[in-house]
Length: 73
Image 1 (cartoon, rainbow, N blue to C red):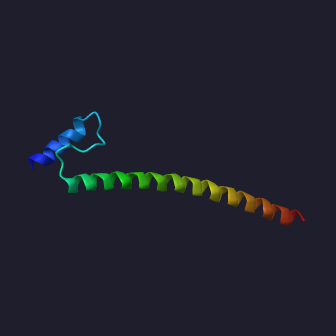
Image 2: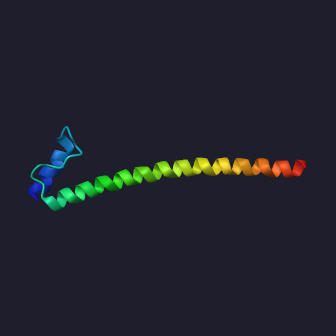
Image 3: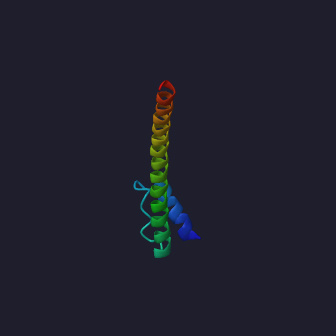
């Protein structure tokens, strides 16, 4: 329990909050690094969703232009 409190305190007070406490057990450090990887992947997914949304809007705009051309002809 004391180690968990020390780690929590380290995370709150450390000037480098993305580094685990030096005395943190290896399994906790592994979980911490996996959590960081998941956060990075989540951010990439958000960015890809935004890019996909823009691409979809462009496709819809082109589709609309094609339909308008067919009605003109």
